[in-house]
Image (cartoon, rainbow, N blue to C red; front, side):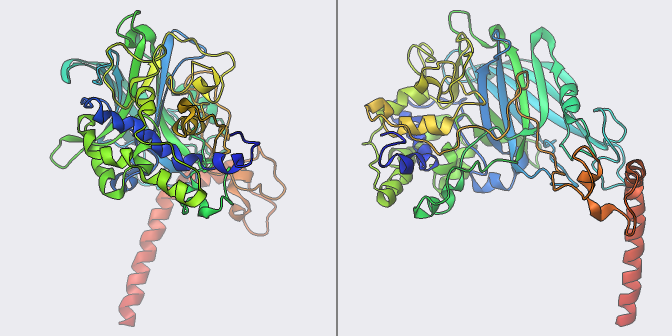
Length: 509
C-alpha cells in the first residue's frame, strides 16, 4: 500500500503508534537465545516514571555512523536531557556532576562491552553572588562574563567478560559548550561551539555541549492515539527543543576487533551516584522508543535499571504487545501475525551480510559495519531504500528511523510492501557537515523583534520592556554593564525588601 493508495495516508500517519512493536524483535530474542549482560536496550524521551523526574540522567537518543568527511573514523552522538526549553533560565542546562555518562562498544558480537568511554563533569561558578548564568556578552569559553561553566574528563575502560582489564584517562578538564542563552548574551554561538571541539590522542575528537534535538517525529500519539481520528499529525514535536550532546569521533581501527571483523555494537548508559557513594544504572539506550511505548508502567523503571540478561522477564510485553492491538481495534489495520521472527535477525543480530557479526549473541544495540563507506546521497530510509550506510546499519542524524522501523514492523520483510510514515521526514534544522554534526541549539531569546530594531540588534532580543519609559532606546553597552552588576544589587534589594515585609507584618499582628 502506498501513500497514494486508499488507506495510505491513514497508515503512514500511524508511524509513531506502532514503532514500539520494534521491541518484539528486541526482546523476543530472549526466547531464542538468552540475552547476555553488558548490552543495553533503549529508552527515550521521558519514557519511565523515575527517569522523567531526573532529566539530567535521561538518555534521549544514540547515533552511530561512519564519519562522512572522515570515513576512516566512526562518530557516536549520545544525547541527554529531553525537551530543553531554550529560554529555561536562569538555571540553564548542565550535565550532572554525580553521574557517569558512558558510551559502550561491543566489537566481537558477544553482547558484552569491550570498550567503555566514560564522561564525568564538573561545574565551576565565578561569582556566586549573582543569579546570572552570564554577566555580559560571551565571546569565548574562557570569557570572564561566562559565570557558570563546565569541564569534563574522559576515561577509556577496556573490559573482558565484564571484568576490567585496564583504565586510562584520555582527556582532562575539557570545556563544555554552554547553553545558548540568546544573541545578546552569545552573539556568535557557532564560535563557542568550535572552541568546544577538542582533539584527543591517537586521532580521536570529542565534543560536549548543547545542541538542537536531532530526533524528528510526531510524538502526539499519546493523545489517545491521535484522538482516534488522525486530525493532528505531521508535526515535528521536538522542533525548537534542545538536548545536551556528547559526541565522540574515533578512528575505526581503535574501535573494531580487527580489519576482518569491522562490525561494532554501540549503546549508552547513565550511572548515578547514590547517598552511599556507589553508582547504579538509571537509564540506558540503544534503539529509540522501546521502553517508551512497549513496557507497561509497572515495568518501565525496572527495565531502565535491569541488565539485558534479565530481559526475558519483559518478554510477554513484546510478544503480545498492547499497541498493535489498539491500532487494529481503532483503525482496522491488521497487525502482522505473531510471533515476529522476522524482526529478531534485523534488530537483535544485525542484517546478515551487512552488519551481523560472526557468532553473534542477540542483544539490543546499534550495530554498525565500519567498512561501509558513507553515501554520497544519503537516503532517509537507509537500507530499505538501498542505502546500506544508513539505519539499521547504525543510525545517522538524517535517518528517518520512525518510517523505516514502521515499514519493517508492519511486514515489509514478510512481503507486505508499504510506504508508511508519520509525515515528518526531516529535522527542522540542517545538520552540520563537520564534527560534531549536530545542529546548533535554538537560542533562548528568540521572541519577536522590538519595535524599530533589526535582527542583529541586541535590543531585538531584550525587548521594549527593558527600555526606560519615555526614551527612544538605551545604549546596548550601558544596558549590559547594568546587567553585569544586577546580581549583587538585586540581592541587596531583595534583602531590604524582606526586612521591610517582616517589620510591616510585625505591626499588623
